[in-house]
Image 1 (cartoon, each protein chain N blue to C red):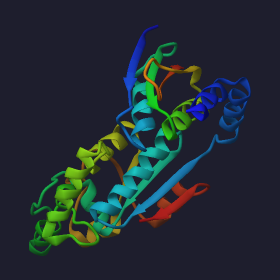
Image 2: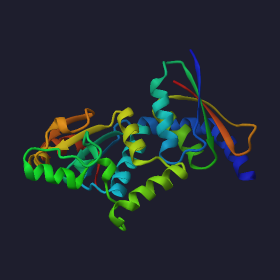
Image 3: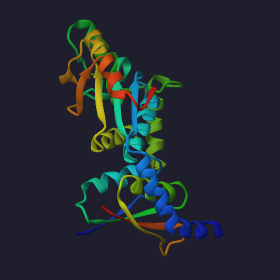
Image 4: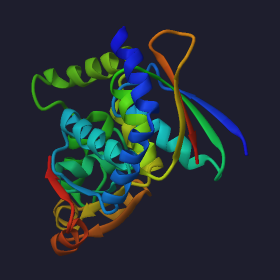
Length: 184
Length: 75
């Protein structure tokens, strides 16, 4: 208890104010770019937790969705035959969108993501959908991979309108230059 | 200038400072946001990240409820 009271005074201390201001000056160009490769519920949760957290503390955040990761930004959240051609539509139904994302371990035919969502709500932890919504509100830059879209027969109109652009590797490298980059 | 209130005592990382940032984005310059947080990580991160981004942290005070703090931020 004593520790908490001491801390309260420390936060109010003027020296801390100066420290914060100095940190603000040093951190003018903070940037985080994440390559969201996985379409798994748990890995996407990690992507959006890091992204929203970073954006909330002033980072510029770029999310580059490729391959299975594209499922997270599909306009149709469930299993739907999106894409051009029979094979693409079949893939679309099998993979689904954000709501049908499996967990990377112990998925149990889609039961585990439901249990996770229940637990997250019960324990007041942001669900994947809430994190995606927060990402939109924070103005996080969402990009889709041109090559993966081509393979899967997807178009920009198959994605949520917040997807800013369709990119290739070189543009992503330019965007992420000078910041931290993660592959999830 | 208006004063707004936000309670993130039931939230966890990263939603404590994510919700604060989203709320701050909605305010006009000069508006005040009172954020209620619990001790620990939110108490450290919310004022620090707000100050880092150029918002003015006016005060951090413990409320009548033990372990719950009020952070007064000016946009």
